[in-house]
Image: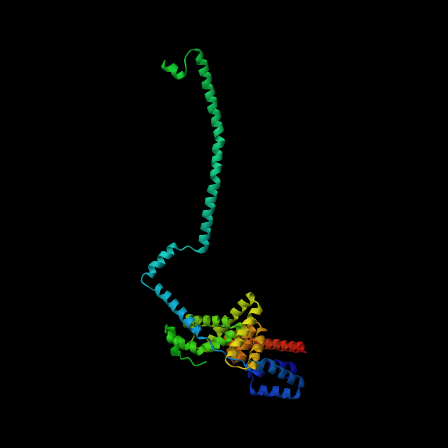
Length: 168
Length: 186
């Protein structure tokens, strides 16, 4: 056994009592003849073994059990509700109304988009009407001018309008 | 840990809260102590202990009666404690944890322990806080709970040589820390 192997065992199996008698004897033989390893063993024992041997154990407060009991009872009540005669009916209704979160999000976005598009589209339709109106107006004005011109001509013959002329 | 009969476990499995309380009484001591040493403060240890027993209750039907019930509970305790400590180390500063440890020391003092005892506890907390949660769990199971390497391997779900290497690294780290502290004192 060389010092490196002994050091490894001093950090693990040797202080933890995980070795058989034969291995332990070999380590002790090495320690008896090697000052460096003996000092190392002492430092390990003092620093990382003894402080843990004297550690304090604490008792859990009673409140923990009360909380656990409360939670278990709550969960059991929920389970009972789920196994009641109406539970199946409630589950079916829920499944009908159920919409997974991503689907709900997509539906919301689609609705928002549709509403936005329809709001934006309305003024553009109005604008089309406005574009059409001047043409109609020009046609109307042209028609009225023609009618006015005809009436002006008829005025000379002593009749008021073409309708009056018809009735007369 | 007091022995828990198979009958008690079966009754608890069937929903008998009295039997589950027997399990709690037999195991809560080591669960609480392991949790406290791994998560480093009293409030978190209480939360972890609560979570351990709720997990035990919920998963009792998955317990294989061929293996040791004690090791099974140790495994749940260590897993939850390590996860809790890792999660918390990301969000909480060391200063707060140190404050919490002082509270723990005070509770011991209030029971009439001497100042020397208080100092020992403080040193122990400092040593454990120097380790990462995995190493801490290893040291706690071995040096405080006295588990064999085989039991540790089963509780931590790692092989026995990994137990050795984790213990070795943890103890080397503590030795280095001690040397540095001695140098600073000089």
